[in-house]
Image: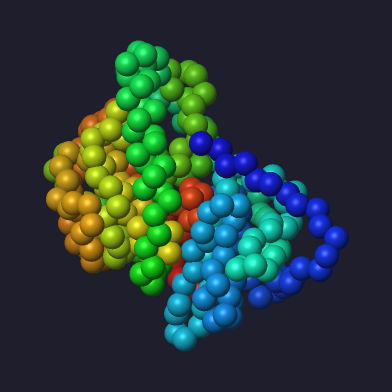
Length: 273
């Protein structure tokens, strides 16, 4: 689902955030903007449109983590956030990023669902949207580990074509692995939702804290339940081939402020200097 970005024209002064204070390494579509903030700003919290923006406490400092939409206009240089009752502009220096194409042959039941299935899809989408709005105040550990050992068979951001018809861009990373391979939590978090949905198959949806969320789909089995607190490295389930899938693999997506970002940014990377 594409996220529509609203732009605002105002006549009063904003508190400008200097681009020189930003970790610009990941400021590209589908990337992450990082900015050091004050304790008061941390306490007040940030919103982008109607979505809470993740924040992080680390080494007695506080940081804003903003998910940059994959389909953002590269000419965008400023985005308006709310910090309590105050307005803040964040300044972006967006880098170009090439996203390739991937063609996949899939059963027509996924590309041409029946009316009954469409009703099911809508209900399941509403359940997921409700979980997306939940907020867990746990501090975030952004030093992720891989959720599964397997060959990467799909990368974030590629334009997907199903049976030669354009679909949504790929919003996560795919790991090809044998059915039954352990899936572990890449970081600690709280399980928001589990289920067996039409497109997702068996899945686990988790909040790592402050609206940094992961979803793991196409699973063969689930080993956690809603409300569980999971430590980094704990087994949450096993690789499968359920839902809209063409073979055993794990699809892993990550969202910040409800925007899909590249999960690999958080693996073996320290996004905070």
